[in-house]
Length: 242
Image 1 (cartoon, one colour):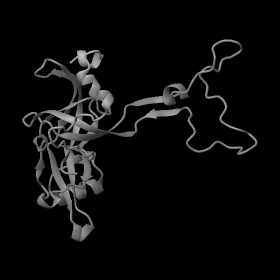
Image 2 (tube, one colour):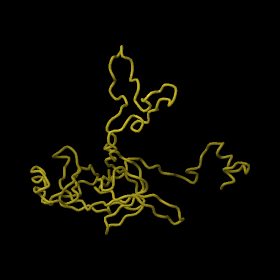
Image 3 (tube, helix red, strand yellow):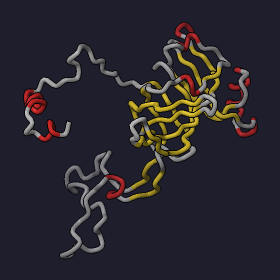
Image 4 (cartoon, helix red, strand yellow):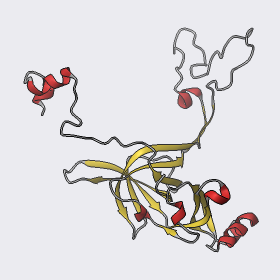
């Protein structure tokens, strides 16, 4: 990845573009982050940097965490995360990474921990179907029901859907647009929703998706004759709506 930063989800809102269209966005308080550790190809076998975010008092950290941060001389950081960045060689311990590392128009992947929903049944957790509500269904309309044969294999296979704890899982949403960047407020405004509750920690990284590059004058024009006919046939609804 090219760039990365640690942030905190502030919440969702909406903004308007030049044409007056509504854009649903999520506001992230991104950074400032400090480089706590640097790994090199020669010593560690790969290159990366460890970023720290949000200063806390020393008593809130464990002894190993305190020793690790004191060795770096960067202060006490609550959240640490390692990123394999392409320009890790150019960064040093103590460098500050701010929100302006990203620019409006870039594509990013956002990783967070999804909201917790407690203990839920199979209908809410997995979208299972309930049993009929009449003709002797009994008080089991939202129960899981049969899980398989009792003779063979005489057990339930791993991964079978069932009731249980829902949410609190690491989720990554890819290929989101950065709409605005405010380095003074340490703010990233990203189009769409991202995982996690308000105040949840998120990791913003350059997208892993490959962006298609359009070439030539005819780039983006479909060669499908059925679609091409719509551009010249006024009888088609798609042509009338243009």
